[in-house]
Image 1 (cartoon, rainbow, N blue to C red):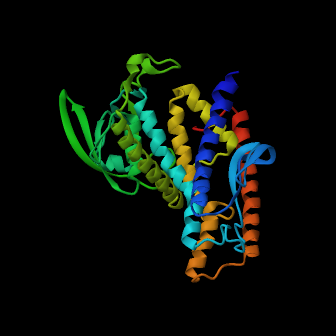
Image 2 (cartoon, helix red, strand yellow):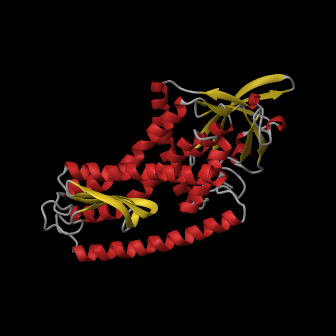
Image 3 (cartoon, rainbow, N blue to C red):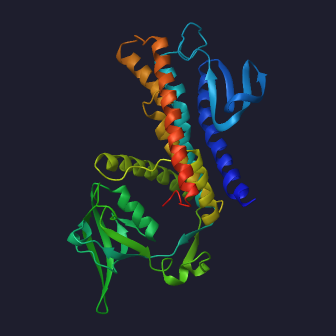
Length: 372
């Protein structure tokens, strides 16, 4: 029962929601531009149940890890109602609308989360370690310094500090710190370089941080006392603003992680359905159901990014063929050649998914967390 409540139900509920939103983008834009929708399905065939309404099959399929909107003539322009028969700009909108919806959804999810009263760790954020030879040491930061601001943003706790540092990777970051020395309190500024590729075990600036209150000994364990946290919630307009900025920040963090990978740093974590299900369960068990909104928002952003990458079979791959057509002044690549590229892409995606699933299952059997 614990697995059902904390892992299976939240995972499938979240997955279905993200898929429906994504496919709704394709469905609505296709209908607006007069493209015939042959089938809108939840899950992948074989079909379990379905019905036909106004020429479109609406189906539920046996393989639950996905969904699709099947359009008439995706590579064949012979029918005027086919996708391929539409002007290039219309095809780009239809193909990109799923990713657009996934990029828009996090604003709503984050805003909903911020409107619900939730716990945030009590700070302030305190530097516990300054690595030798690090940018932080060169800038004069010391153990015991309290971080008040980073690049002008007020820092409440460790989460705020960590996020702001990673948002400014590759830049010189302005720290405002409070230092208590020999009974005297000083407020100091320090300019610290946030590295793309720090040595193993070090963060971008070379510091380790904890929350003074939430990170103290009294707050450790499975059930920390209430004084370790404070309740926070926003008004409707405040939550919308916070949701917008959180979405932008998440996109910047994703971009920075990719750049860091190419510059020799650690790459973004990769997980398949099993890993995401594990992560979903850990989030719900440790932080409650409201935290699932944040997790779903982050997954939606990742889904948007992946779908616009120029990979065969994905939306971005199909959009790439349209852009090539535009660059060639309307001369299309033969539909059968495009179909072969997407078929090869599908085979590679399935192979990659199997490898990732194997790694996920091995980690789960080994008792390791996806977040470790």
